[in-house]
Image (spheres, rainbow, N blue to C red):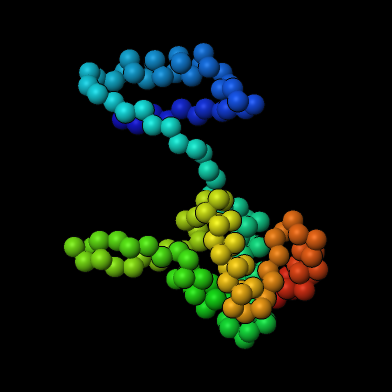
Length: 145
């Protein structure tokens, strides 16, 4: 049995401490005797629609500036930056995953890698949505999506 309890920390303090204590206590009362592990992990959200839109605007820019199809650029960057090793039946293989599995932090890191690569290797500057040149960039490439 797995029980999820959401905890919020603000200003250095855990909110609703009594409620959390009571919820944990009640959850443990329903468990049979044995050893249990309590894990705490940061709640991170799946990449946002705004992040996805940012990514595809960048892929359109690359397509228009280099002639490389935007879907091929997508696959290239996933292969370059979203690759990991896995053992399948004792054989080490490269597994490449797509952007839909990334959380907001992973997606930001992925985009930073793409921005560095395109700047260094292609001479293309891909702005962040909070950059001053974002509106101009968006207006230039949004019509191609």
